[in-house]
Image (spheres, rainbow, N blue to C red):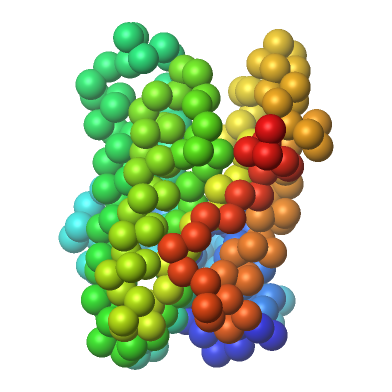
Length: 250
């Protein structure tokens, strides 16, 4: 029960890594706010956690809308009086094209969701945490923020930006005891990566660069997320933990 009585918002938690983190936090005693564009899917997840005797609720969130973000923050603060943990997990990668063929619209869509959305969520929640002099923010970056992934120029730019955003927020907010860190997974076995796993050539190429020779399971990202949200990491800020099967060690 490392997160007992903590209030945690997990964005993009209706599927994949975010869903696994939400469940992991609830299992550790947190009250989890499941957030995503589909409030119906969020309610299904929150109801399932509640049936297991855990604490969860669902709210609709569009991270590209500052109004939507503020509605969630205000709603959580009104109900619980505080926000202890924010996991910025929302992210997209709809384009697999060379840089010269990537459209401006695609670039803007990816940057607006992955980078600007994370900034806006961190800013809105950070204001609440700063007033209380306490909080943990965890940004979900990627190996793509550290190493080049061909045909993913906008995605990599957004994830590299998240690593620097994490550092700047950590330095600025350290005086308020608001700790900001990031997790950088390699490829994880979710709906997000189904197309890559189904293509034999692409899959074999990815595995050639991964020492563990497999995709991660969503649950294998949860341990780092719990650690960074818990009191065990109270002297860690501005860091990115790569949960990548050894990819960035090569």
